[in-house]
Length: 343
Image 1: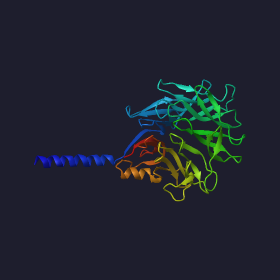
Image 2: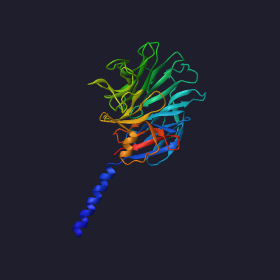
Image 3: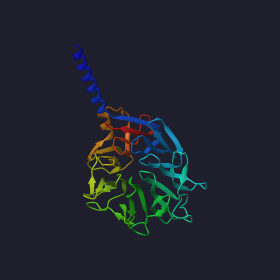
Image 4: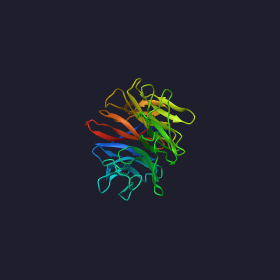
């Protein structure tokens, strides 16, 4: 009898473990928040209040902590550095970074003499894994803006553009600090996806035409993703050295737009969104090994309570792909950041 009881307990524990392993967790954050970045281990999520200003959330604090500034674009993989935007004493917006001493450090623009465009000097968009390199957009007056690369030793470097009279922007940088991706305008003004290679921007061409912005890159720069692929620019795209640019479909056959916005180190988990039609409606997506799934439907089938939620976009993916973050509209009809832990 004792042996039978012990065997039943072992079976119960095994079954419970399997159920737990197959479940996902969904954590909504405060209203009027949007998650924009996540640390490599998924323990820190950062974002922006819809009314302006940045925040962070940690697994330990389990609450949103305001950090000021104008907005947050992301966080380094090691969790040391949050990058975004903040005002100087003259209320001119600067690219800036925040560290755990509680203060923002402003990056200015290309030179001390660079004039702002109205109230804008620069904006931070991406940061390397150790926080030492920041990329983004800098202004030299209102004529045009260029992508920049910044580090503490060299300061802000103007990355120029493919067409000298047009603009560019650096949207992201690989964790190893070697690959910068973003866009550089064509002469027509089309924002062509591009990467910074050997001292200049190199545009990405899709199967049919040039593709739109590069939005994210994995840790070693071997996988780049973006949007604006196909005859009507309706699909997302993924690039590797071996395959070149491939148009990637989401869960909607003929959408207005599909976006890949973030990815794990190995590229097996990619987050993004699809807009079925022209307008504000979006649906948060994940791609597992290249196969798209609607995030809300996925969570419902994996034990997470998301009834009443309209999940709009996944903007951040942890290094191992086990944690993702983004934003949606809750049952209260307000915008909320969310954090999802996958099975």
